[in-house]
Each structure stands twice: as structure tokens, then as C-alpha cells.
Length: 383
Image 1: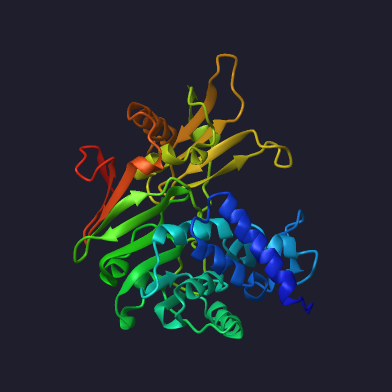
Image 2: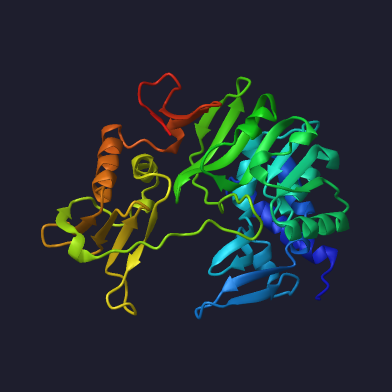
């Protein structure tokens, strides 16, 4: 293992903190100081990068040539399961934006869902100045054990639990703040129940693949929380209830002989990149949407995209436009998926193309309600 001096890593950590401050992702001196005091290379001693041949290359975080990457605003993947990342150290700029939004103050108790490497827990304990104020939960026992050991090396001893994070930490009382560094399809009632009155919860709500964003909620009733979506999109790995497992992806069967052909004038063939209308579309498409690219032949650049749902519905959309500016669409199955996407775009346009900050969410024990502009708005959707 390469040994680096305190002066070396502190120089890099301060450079990272300065960069986050200068780009507006850190607004307070307290969080700037916390970033300068946390050695990310200790908590993430190695990271992986995917190679062109599909293998993962391992990198020593302490190696001098890797320190600029470790102390940059970059997500570091720490484990894969198959081709998909299993765990990572999230982009520091996103984490600091979330921590600033959480409005954490000394004397408060914070629940973190998704311990991961422990970097975020280290920032929290530095900021709060009291290890007993931070509780962090992760489903992966190896990650929890490693984080506990590395945090202890830094002199931090927050409470770390191996458990299903969607259940929170029911035996440890209530929390003033809850932050989830994983995506959930619904805000767990347990998080609201374990929040203090007027407690704040921050989570990545994804009602389906890529469909949703960060939402900041305040507890306003026994089982009720309400708030707005954050204008900055975030993409976290889905919460898992069992260690080492990711949600399986179904493999759609698409036979062009079964499809109906037509033309679309929608300006995009990749609707999941138009984030707000994609969120609106997901409300009708359903919670299990798969999408991707099709290449013909397979070793050539893609010629179309596709969407599919488990009921056997699918759509294929040409990437190239014809002379009239349209794209060919093939649709099959019990539902017309691309028609639903078109309808969502039309609805979004009719509303004035609102961004995330105009949308809010009310959660109670029975349902999730998305609203536009105000909770009393007549423009609302029940998830």
C-alpha cells in the first residue's frame, strides 16, 4: 500500500472543497471545512473502472497518479455485480448539495440510508461534532464492517447497522434528518414515522427506471410528509432489501412481425433523457420499464431505441428522421407505449414545460400525490 502524507491528501481535499464552493455546491463554511478534514482515499482505498473489454480495472486510491481522481467531483465505483455497479462513493458535489439542503445543525440526530464507503457518514460526524448523532444503515454487511473499521481509523464511531434501509432504524428512536443515498420507488412510511415533528427527509424518488428525482420532504403529520422536488437531477442505485442482489431486468421479446408501424413527430427517440416528461410518462407506463438501443447488425452503431414493459408491450423508435422530420415507430402488445410517451409530452407542453422545482409531493400512509406548484393544485397525480 502506498503511504501518503497528511500534507499531501489535505492539499487535495482542500482543492476539492474549494472547487465545490466555487461551483456553488458548497455554500457554508462548515461543510467546506468538513470536506477538507475527511481523507476520501482512506474510506475508498480502491476503486474500479470498467474497461472496453467489459472487465473491471482496480486502482489504488493512495497512488500519487490517482489522487487527482479520488479528490475530484467524481463517483468512484467500488463493486460490481455482473456489468452493473453494486456500490460506489457518490459524486461529492451531489452529496454536499444534498447535505446543504438537509439543513443539518449540531445537536440534531441524522439517519443515513446507504452507508456505502462511509464517506458521507464521515462528513456528517465532522459537521455535527458528535458521533452519537449519526446512524447509518446498509444492507451489505461487508460494506458496513469495512466502513466501521475505516471510520474508526479516522477517530469516528457513528452507529452503523446492517439492515434493510427501507425499514429505517426503528429501535433507535426518532431522527431530525433522514438522507437516503439510494433510490426508492415510494417513500417508506417507516422513515416518516421515525422522523421528529418537522423533521426533514431527502431521498431519490424513482417511480420507475430513471423516472423521478430528489425530493425534500418535511414531516407535517403523524404519517404525513410534504415537500418539493429538487431542481437538480440525481441518479442513485436502487435500494435493496437483500445483500448482493439487484433487481432483475426482464428480457423483452420484440418481433417486428407483430408490430404496427407509424410515424412520430416527437423530437426525441430517447425519452428517458427528457426527465420531467419521462416522469409523467412513467405514471402511465408503470413501475417496470426497460429501454435500450438496437443495432442492426449487432456490431454496428445503434439504429433505433426501444421501450418495453412486463405485460409484453413494446415500442421501437428509429434514431434517424425521414425527409418530413418524422421517425418510424413500431408498437406491439396490449398497450401502445410510444403513444403514452407522446401523451406525456403533450401534457407537459400544455402545462408550460415545468421544471422539477414546480413539482411537489405529499406522502401519507395511503398514497403518494404529486402536485404542480401548490399542494392544493387541481393539477395532481396519485402514484
